[in-house]
Every structure is written in C-alpha cells, then in structure tokens.
Image (tube, helix red, strand yellow):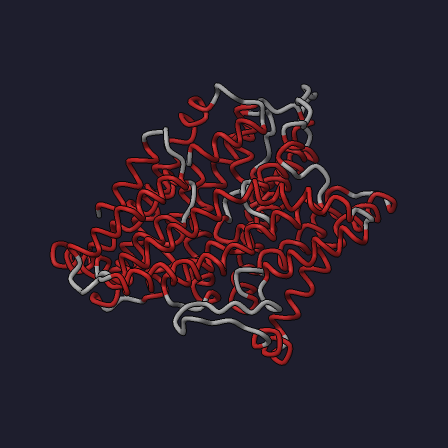
Length: 483
C-alpha cells in the first residue's frame, strides 16, 4: 500500500498536483515490487511492466487529445482562454417553468453530452454557458455545473472506462454495461441535490415536474445501458443523448425554423461523427475491416490500437475536416497546441498510473494485497472498495488512479471469493469516477467558471451530506455484490 499512500499524501498536501504525485507513486512502486514482492522482479520484468503501462497510455491518450481538439474546433470559445471570457450573470426576474426546464436540460443533457464528447470539465462549461443568463447565484451555479459530471464513466468518449477495462482484462462493452446500474442508483442522490438547489435558487417545480425530470433521467439511462452493450462506452452516450437533446430542445424550447436550422448546422459535425461511430460499431463487416486494418497489438492481453477504428482517431480526423470545411485551416496549429496544453496533465497522469499499476501487478504486490485482505476480512474485504476508490477519486479528480492502484487486487479478491468479476470491476470503477465529482479540482473549475471564488467552503457544506449518502449507497451496493 506504500505507493498508494504516497500518491494520497502527495495530493492531500495541496502542494503537489496529480501528475507529480503519480510520478512519485511510480518511483515508490519500483523498489516495493523489487524488494518486497512475492515473485521475481528484475530489470527485465521492470522494462516489460513499464512498456505495458506505456502502451495502455498510448491507447487512451487519443481519446483525451482528440476530444479536446474536436470540441475546440466545433464549439466556438471552447478553449480555456475563452472560458474565462464568459460574461458575468445578471439578475433575472421570477423563474418560469421554461427556465426550470432549461436548467434541467443544461445539467442532465447538455452537460453530460459535452463531457462525453471531450471530458476535462467541458460539461461544466456547457452547463454554465447555457444558464448563467438566468441570474443564478454563483454558489448555486457551481452545484449545477457539477451536475454535468454525474455520468462521468462515459466522459471523454468513455476513456476512463476503456482504461478500467484494460486494467480488469475485460471487454469495455461489458464493464461499461455493468457500470450503468450503480451509476443509475447514484441518481437517487444527484436528483434530490438538483431539486433542492433549484428550489433554493428560486426555480421551484411541482411534484409532477420532478417526476417528469426523473422519467427523462430513467429513459436516458435505460437507453444508455443498451447502447453501451452494443456500441461500447466510446460512442454510447453521444449516440443516445444526441437524439434526446434534439427531442427535448424541439419540444420544450420550441425554436423557430430559423433557430432550429442554425442549431442543426452548428451541431452537424457532432451528428456526422456520432453517426459514423455508431455505424462502425453496428455493422459487423465494417467493424471487422476497420478494427483489423493496420491494427497494432504488442501485448495479447492488452487493448490493440486500430487507427481506423479507434474513436480518438475519428475525433482528430473530425476536427481536421471540420476546420477545413469552415475555412479555418490556419487555426489548426493553435487549436492543437491548446488541446495539448489542456490535456497534457491528464495524459501524463494516465501514463504514470498505468505504469505504476503494471509494476505492482508484475511484482505480485496486487495479488499479495488481495491475499492479505481476504485472509483478514474474507468476502467483506470487497466492502472497502467504495471507500478506498471513492477517497482516491476525490483526491486525484479521476477514477484512473484508484483503478490503477486497486483494480488488480479487487479482481483477485473477487476470484478468491467466487464473485462476479464484471460486477466487482464495475463497482470499483464507478466508485472512483463518480466520487471525483467532489474533488477540489472540479470544485476549483466550477468556482472559476461561475465566478464563485471564495464560496467553495459554503458549497462543500451543502454537498457534504450528499457525499455521505453516495458513500453509503456504494457500500450497500458492495454488500449486495458480496451477499
């Protein structure tokens, strides 16, 4: 546990970011694996472990950088400098039902869609940009921004779920599908938080309207579960929430024909990208052709990199074609540099955590931790999953760190206890990713976008009981898996 504690202590100090903390964790993992592991771990094994971690990172990085690049090209003002240029909100008169529905639309449809297309808190930007003209107080706007992160297992084209699948040695479709149930159950926390904050902010609604919102959430999650099973976590949310957004927009916003055509033109690149990804996943012949052409697979038990099938490649190509179509070829270099600057910390963290996970696994540390926990707690050791993963998700603002540190041990525990491996892996994954919503990093982003600096403590006071409810619900799910 020393490498994990090293990461936790470094991040908790507030003086070291996630990437340097991941580097310290990797440095700590090497001597631990070499001198305390139960299996031989010489220089050769170290090189192989580092190469495996590097390969895992290489398969994930295109999602991150491609998503940022595509979003910046398609959505004007998406670069970080433009985010700071959002105008301050002005007070608005009494809230109407239409304003309440716009608020729900921004938090639970537009926000998750934007987060899925790109990641990196862009969902918060999309949510705030859509509703800040309603005159919402910064402390409430910060909470609404965080609501865009409630479907985070599908954020960044599902890159975190793809990485979790690599750690778990499971198909990404399977772990994504099993992640849908705990994600849906957490809506029992997120929706009441939204309702309470909306009422406090002056956007009251009848019980019937709240039930209507719950029905939209249920429909979206039900369709998302099926789409994840057939399309995979990369394109599932985009394929489902794109049409849902169009239906909600046309039904509740009732735009004029001119407004609807302008919106459709702006979203055309998204529609083409989503349609292409869906077709490539649903057509067996096309899928086999794209997935096998020029595919690189240096490790048989790790994901391959098929350049024509990888969603990250599609995002990069989509951004390039969109820029050429819009006559913005000269801005490509600037947008690529901006995407790299924004995504570099996360990309480096993915590489470092993946290499640390492979070092600990190759040295037998993960298996030894599982053996020790099982000897002491038996099946009950798995009940600690949400607490450990959730705490690291909060500290590191990502599910990647807890997945890299604990996934191997959790799966070893599941095998020893004779439990369902996909269910255990999904709970591990959702615990870390979902609890990252409470991360100080995300809170800082929300405060910056909402002009709420100095109000973070008050917002945390509001969120604290809901965080406790999340942990309790996740622990109950762990108990259900064990029993």
